[in-house]
Image (tube, rainbow, N blue to C red; front, side):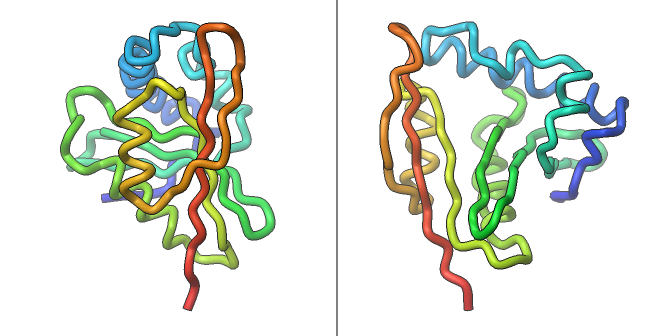
Length: 153
């Protein structure tokens, strides 16, 4: 089940951090860069981030989440994560689809990920995202940006 998470609730922010850190440690290993911002988050930074979070639950266990900021007709995916214990269960894909179908006049999804993060790149491209650019953040880290147009009926 997917439901919105009140990230301004300290207990929920703690639960989010408990799945975020292990998930992003896997990404850090994949891209060989352990200074990615989500690994530096604290409960207080999550409380103040201004993002809208949706969590994927199996029974009462938070297993994955997606966090967005919506502005105008665009949804910017700030984080998409699944706890490593729940990899390869289709959770990230379900979260993507959930956000794609949010109520509102949204026409575009955008997201960035580490250029060496092959699983994330595969997820986005296999779900209709196309690459829009690569930014070198520093010598050891580049980010690839993706975009997807959403058809509204």
